Image 1: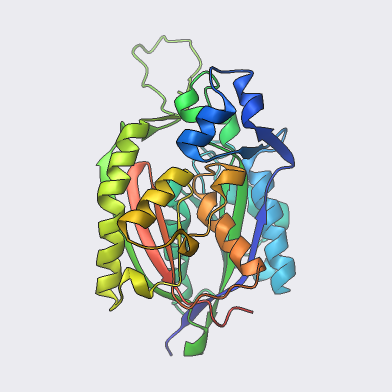
Image 2: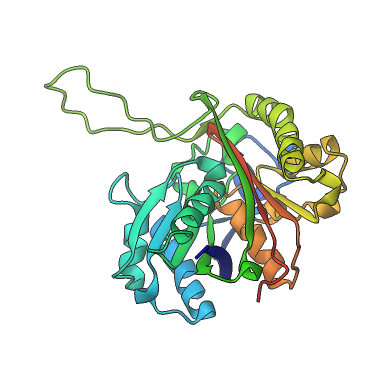
Length: 328
């Protein structure tokens, strides 16, 4: 019997500490005027004394409560993050323990700002088999702990937060919400990187391992996105018998407002089709798309043709087409 996948619940969490552009200007050479002109970002949230798994666990608990599902009924937990609590164990296993999902298997996906897309795609495949029935897909990022606050070209962009969905399998075709996907990678390790650990040069080395801070080449990112993402969206639409005009909404990675505006212009689509929150919460990497998705669902919007498009370090990018008209 063929199985389908639906979104049964959506949730989000933002840490309470709001950081303004003016505050950042006190610790680095920047200003509110400069940040807004270049990024459209006004504020972001920073997690104080809260790690990635703690934010993710709060989202997971909300999802269980909304769907009225016990933690022991979850089969799978996938967490998309590039700011984990540790390299190992996986942040997903820490969330599993925190909510008591004792029957679930759990692991992380590292696809940077495309992480939610890749994690959603992966969970979808598990749930279309006979073995698994419910999955938590969560994106959680604690970027503030990874930033160089003297680097205004990167630090002013980012914020912390988490969001996700609870997916359920179904035998009813009307429940099918994940319609199509297209995932890609274009290997380029220098444009965006974080947490690199150099190999030792001597077996007697006594220095503790050190990671580099987050870095992005903003100009190279802008060029890659503007040259590759609009054609990718057009090609994905064409493959599914659509045009960008047919899309009800497009939620892109919340990189910065100016980049989202450029994508909309290149697709010749109005910004009203591109819901966003980057001006309020900053670039939250993999969590950005999930945060906006939760916002539109909580606002009662049920687009029939909703495209999610992520792009980030790797360079990884991809899209998923959703039909949310039957979301409860």
